[in-house]
Image (cartoon, rainbow, N blue to C red):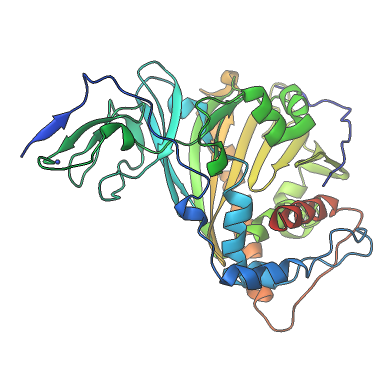
Length: 417
């Protein structure tokens, strides 16, 4: 079992008749698109949304600060602003490297109105593209699995796993057409530890490769080594995925995660009985916060329990959580589906020595499911309260909710750029 480090340095936040087969042609790389991507079209409603940003002042000290207003959690124009300024900029966790273990493996996803596909090509290079056919905009792939090429289900246009257009069906008579201009639109992709990351910022799309050390610094800042030392790495075995659609704004779920264990003794009594809540601590890094707590359950021989001797809960801005406890690691990816709905994707990983212990795995997943169901009730209740005319602002509990305040300050910083 990986043991958690005892000392963590604090780094505070700063602000388809005739088919043209191009397989034997001398191809150029797929064209790169400009920063003016369609998913970042301006909208007049965003002007009003920007005014709402100023209803939160990140410079007020935690002890005196008001929380962001309820409009941040319910206003449709504010949600659109967040997509543009938060999710369509910077590195986002979208999957894990075991999904791309072999050549031809792929998986798909959606963030906002961006459909993407990530794959490992014939040369085992990880690539990512907008999952959209360049002919008439059909989605190319769905789900995950293996493909030697992407064939559009609409008209049969075919693309290599490197994004190059291999075949365009029934285009005899077409003029002013260069196949090299109609490859899949690429996206910057990188990996760190067990995770696959994408960057939807069009300004980076012209770069064929990325510096993964630089990506780590941008995504995790100085926290990368801390996570490695605490067992967040690619050595763990993948177990399963659980998905939860929750009727709340995506930030409500994040806030719930970031309250420093405040709600645990009230809402998660079973979990609380296995934690020494008085040991709860929070450390802030540039774009990461780490909450940690010692386990309170007693070990019996080789039975270390699900939580082990200490638990680490890392929040990676804006929407990714890494939880390392006992022999387990699970990740929570919060995907916004609208102003009052989100999808939370849980992926579970386990140390190799436990991967054949079916009973332990089943009991651990049941315990985890119980906690998630309790959190869903809380988050959906909060969302209803946020929509009430009785609530506009709240306050922070300074001794425990500094990670939440840190999250809100990072949001404000992105939203004002």
